[in-house]
Image (cartoon, rainbow, N blue to C red; front, side, top):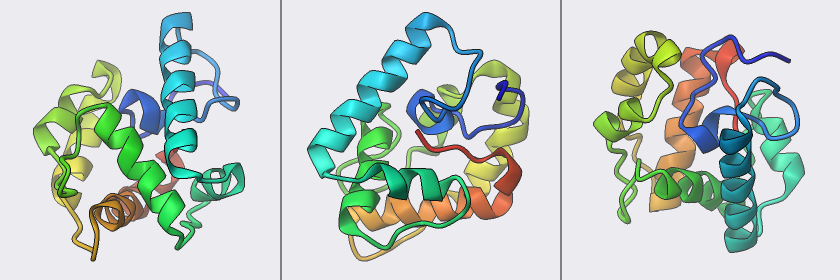
Length: 137
């Protein structure tokens, strides 16, 4: 699948590692590194990550923390689970920024019981706003 849609794009959050082509070698290496780091850190499972691409967001702490980990690695979320909207928009590839920025701004930070749940709820908002363009690493 060619990267041609929005693909909520902060490097790690936009490209599903083995499913999308068109990434530079450097970007692919970074995406792989983020994915591996966050899988190891959280214990999230690949099936939950794959299911998120279809809008099925596993209600598991490991998966919620995987999403937060990716965002933290990109400096898009703080330790309290507050999304830095400006930083998130800044790391979007330029070709997607115009389409994605209003969605990132609209979703802001969705509040849950934990910082990991904030990231998870916010990504559900991204998916709801642009289901055809949503990818999670």
